Image 1 (cartoon, rainbow over the protein chains, first blue to last red):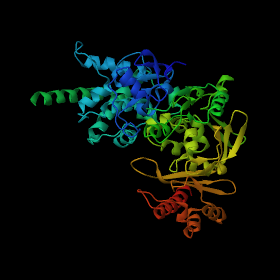
Image 2: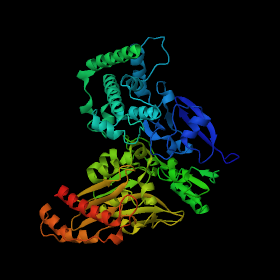
Image 3: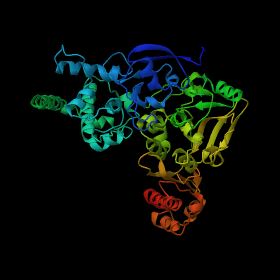
Image 4: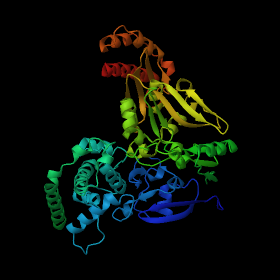
Length: 233
Length: 295
């Protein structure tokens, strides 16, 4: 082990190998924000209550203020900063999203957004924005969970994320939009396979393939509406 | 400034136990979901962290570790059902999310699935473990009630021996267990109830149980366990006896058996959320509702 009570940590963050010496009581969010400069993840309560610091570890949402950086040895971490980058532990979640978003936008327009990020914009799902990165990371993890696309189920699944502006209505709508598109596109590509569904029975019933086209149309239309509104402001 | 100066990530239970024996001031960290807030708030004092994440197998809520080959036998997050013995063994490092998603747990006792899915929020369930929860024995934690209702043993290791503590003897009071300072929990082995349910009256801000109550019907007796009363999880023997002695198992006769029961408020404690009298009242109501739900 090294000097000054620092210990070696190797992990993958947003597709990059990271090798760093950290103190035993350094939390993951401190590593991400202070050592790696990834400030998209916000520090809220720092005691695992608000969810603003939510990131993905091996595709699962966790609160980065409430795990030690050293506990993440060898794990694959994705933050909001790298949501649309590949390869990551959530490549299967994001590649299609990036492509879809790219076609929906001017190809020269950078940076591209993840489908869930776009859904939050479309639905006006943020006020002060402090909770947003955590909300979006939590929502992205829901794609593979037994979360039905209805208001009650989504609100329940967002239970670990607080919005102090209390803008939950639009957040829930945004998550539903994002989940609908992400699940449909993955189903088309055969990414959601039956092996994985063994332990998450019920997911099949939520995939509505017939509604994909209308969903995309709706998505585009809403997007246009928002743009129009912004233009008139 | 922090007082934590040492860190160890053992890859075997034996190595973890030896490290614990060598430094009585060391703290085992499983998921860390209870420990980290206490560390952050300055409520915990220790100089060494023994990180147990190295003892787990594949980390995913939907990929249950499969016992194929000798190597995987060392994983501390395995869930194994013994059909002959009617028992289920859950590794101490199994996360709440993993247990909630486990087909083996669901087929063994759906009450455990439901209980695991109601702990904290998804982010906490993805990290927090059953071993960490029972060792911490927060007076409002759900797992102790679930374990007491099923009955079974807690499998414990130290550097020199392994032993099995009956769950009835394991939870000794508020934040205390029968675990010795040099011991760690390896797994829990639970008995299969005929039927069981867990009802939780949420404290809405923290999602801990203001009161939680589990009723389990076994072949020859009932077990009733309550968490959230304030002194740690307990069994409610009066209710167990009343249910066991009821002549017919229908919700009418069982509810009648519970009518005259008294749960002494001395067994609870009050805080800013609820008084002791209110807590025992809620426990009694939950018990009646649980019986109605089951029969």
